[in-house]
Length: 123
Length: 283
Length: 218
Image (cartoon, rainbow over all chains, first blue to last red):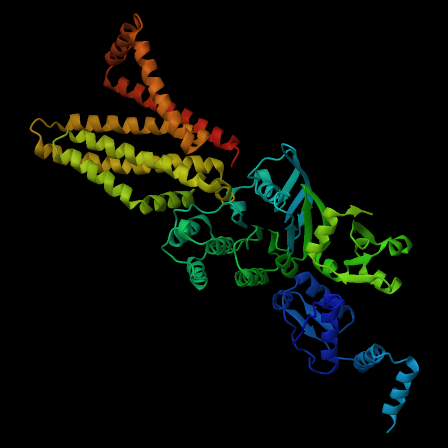
């Protein structure tokens, strides 16, 4: 399981971990039953505090994505299609946000951006 | 594991007044300038110096009632003190073997070899870095439940520090309830390793926060005079006057990112927080 | 306490040069025609000096802080120093008594075994009393200042004793007491000696423990 932290990002680290794991689950890169790295192990690799990793894992467990067995570690649970859809939606949203940011950076107006979107949507 | 309740100690004009706690399984950091009271706190925790007030409980017992058996569960690194300079690594191994039930000599010597420590040289001929490595290897050599480490990375270069911190992470990973109290004035070491951090200044604890909250929610705002007047200051902890106006510390940068989009909001590290809290005024 | 003992023994072993010199001088004394009892006293006392130097090794560079964070107690620390002093001084005593005795019985015409043993036992007594006097001073003042205090103290004691004995009538009283004890028979004399001994050791150990428990580490 590969997780990369962007230290320069304004997004809190545990959120970054949660999102990356979520999208990996949604894209079937992490399949049901796959064990996640131990809290300490991941903390050591990412060079962050173990509590941060624990928060991320707790969050994922609350959302029903992983399960933690005391003494054994955490495992990925089955994925609901709703979650997959949500993850995919978010990814697309992120791409679009990037495009919008770039456009605005060039000085384009919202109207111009919508034009371009229509153009791209045409078959 | 370790709890300081209203602990006081006076040295002339310097007064230490500390309440803090290391919970099982946690890595707690103590950061502060030289002379802020870190070493005093550590020595009090080990009953090496008497206190003028308050109570320190270690493994649930008052620290003054600790027996040598209790102390076997401790792993200690002190910044200004260690094994006698006239001993060698081989000597230390034999001494530890006689002192601790859970000490593994082969393991210890193997690790010393891995870290490049000479076996027959007297400690007085070691470099600072080698001394630091030895101290830490001794501390983790006997299945200690609580590590009390005062500036364990002092004298080490970046690579050496990374190696020691990785070693510590592995050690903690072996058993869930192992805990650490670690002090440093190198903020980045603590940021990468500690679960929560106490900041000490002039003998008092000025801040206690979880590391990921410090890194994830705390922030610095840079505002000019007029912005300062108009803005919502409810989440501002302290301010520092600058050329351009003010530097402000907040414990919720998301609040300002969402509600006051015009203001410059930055992430911050432990060093920034310390600077602002010690040099700035509370708000 | 075991760990402390091992540590001090390793420190001693690390000072090979010291050993060699002491042994060489001791042998020199003996072979150059001096009374071998000299060798016994020299070697025994010098080894017990080493106990004081282990204290200075311990306190050097703020070493006490680290030492007492290890699984040792202050009482155990005191006990170990006495034990170490007795062990090393005692070992030297046994070795030199045996060797000196053998040499004396071969080289000296008027060698009497009983006399030799009595002399050697006298040295052993001096060793124990020496430890009992100097260890508490070392614990209290640290080894640097302690050495000075001991030297000054010894001179003062010597002078004081001389002055006391020179006072009118004191010598007669002392002689009278000694005669009375001697007249009680050898067993009684030995008994008094052992009692005196035991008291000295007990007082010394108690004082040392009290000093170390109250000591402010630095």
